[in-house]
Image (cartoon, rainbow, N blue to C red; front, side):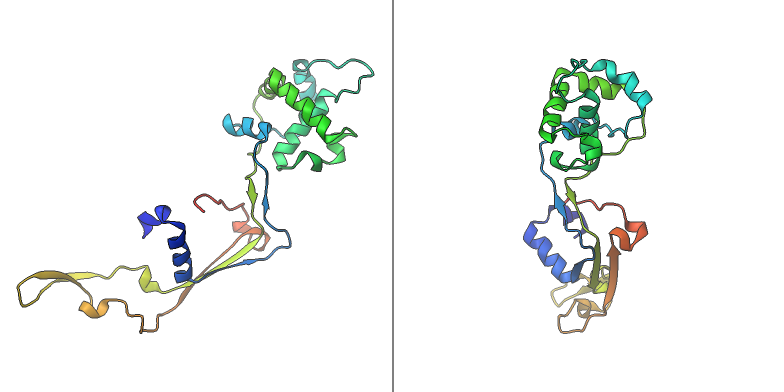
Length: 220
């Protein structure tokens, strides 16, 4: 089963979960969240295998602002720093543009911020600014699906995990040999025999600190 698990069709995986009696309890009030795909800024960091920069200091901004066109005085255009930092904050936290906090938007409309940041991305100024930051301790782009806190339990028959021990061959009346296991043919699993139960538990989220990292959904 182990080498074939990744290639099992979905219906067979469902049967396996039933066999192991796996139960999942959602332990937080926050439901799972599936974010929309297609953010060009997230795509840039993912495609280039780059981390998202932390919030900028004034010194960092003074070093990279030369890459952005200087807006005209008394212009209603979104300031370059607002557009740039909003795009980073959006990617860093996996937020929709409309959910950006006021401290980031500074009174600007989310749609206007997006259009200005996108224009900088298309002209190459946005990418040059990220590169000009040099080395920084960033964070990865958050996954598209965020799991709630879960408590996962499972019970199973230990005999399902341990293959029978081969003892040798026995011969029938025709002289044909066959491999036997401890207990001979009686070692075959019988549905009429009450299994010895064992259990396994796993926890994610705030209820278990060692397992608090966001679980992967790869292969599901």
